[in-house]
Image (cartoon, rainbow over the protein chains, first blue to last red):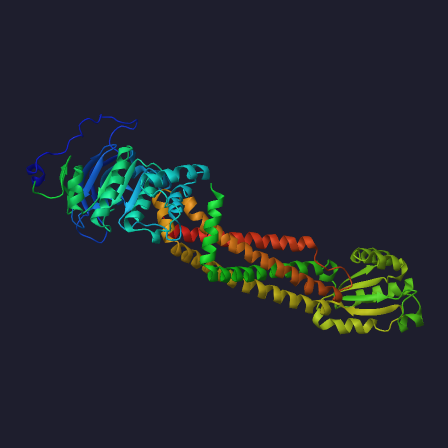
Length: 256
Length: 303
């Protein structure tokens, strides 16, 4: 808390963005004094965290391993339940969301991971289409939308490649296409550049930026200082499960 | 609902898990077959026991004008006096509990009914060729048969004395034993099948954990995630059922239907009896596989 004051510009609502930008007003992600304690550990993974993420924002979530970044993302997806506090995602109180409504929440959230998580026996087109097929979208719709998204992530002409024929960067683009193909309200990216060399990472970040510009809120957990510094987006830093910094146009390091 | 997609997933699941699926099909087939066999035997036993056979231990057939046996040819058909005498003597015996006289008319009607599957045979036999008889119920059939039979043997008017009970009892004992045996083994097999379905579905879910993980992540409903697995088990069950149905048909044709030769009247199970049993096996198979995989999935594929 002391550091947060010392480090100057505490984040405010991004200039130029209206207070209520959508019909369901308020932040798309709202953490109110959230604490998460895993059963077999004596230290909480997240402790009294208050975070608001507005619609259309691009947020970096940084901090060392074990600082609670992944826990934050898992809480947003309701893969975990908080020990204390309240979480609202897309205007819904997660505590009051019944189990069978969780899939509907997750349709509004896209996810990208460090390890891509593609299906090895399906080609690019099928991998992206899979996300729509399993939520019961009609085939005609899939045929129309999937090529568009494959173009958007810069994989035009590679729709029938298998994942093992693609480079790491290309595989991550497929994963992003899959996460975005249902036009989610929020995109969560857990160290998407973690397995990718710096040169290729820039391309990945461009795709994320493109997705962000369509109005999708992007929350990206990362260790990559160069990327955070170059993007100049909002930075939330976690340490030992606490928010130690929340800057609207932040950088990775502490010396600026 | 995208049925195409679901069936594609089922096909992948069945193929990847082929050996387990084959084992599952075989075990389900055997357990359904044994279950069906028990039921068929039960029906066969019920079919075979007609009303009077359950009550009568001795039948005393009287001579008619056409009876071929030596005694009848010497003495001629039983007269009314002989009949009354036999009735009186039987009722006087302390070993006899009950005597019932079946006239020629009644016997002919019963004959027509029992041989209804062979109308030409019924036509060929005139009504007065069917003998009248005394049906005797004994107090203690195990020991009294020879005493009662001895007092009547060789009397004028008596053609044949038959110990119906001892003849049929062997059949019932055999059939009941087979029924109990097949039902017990069926029960054990059903337990094995339940465990096997659970295991197969668990393996299948483990094999496809990548897919299901992504499905959950992109917001596929529980129904959509679990349906391919559920149908996988049910389809394996259906294959097992088809095999079991075939085996039951063979069982009926090659074994149960041959029982007919030991009976003078129609004991053959009808096609609808078989269909009933097969449909029951279908319900049991689908329920067994569906319910087991549903419970397994609740445990292993949670949101």
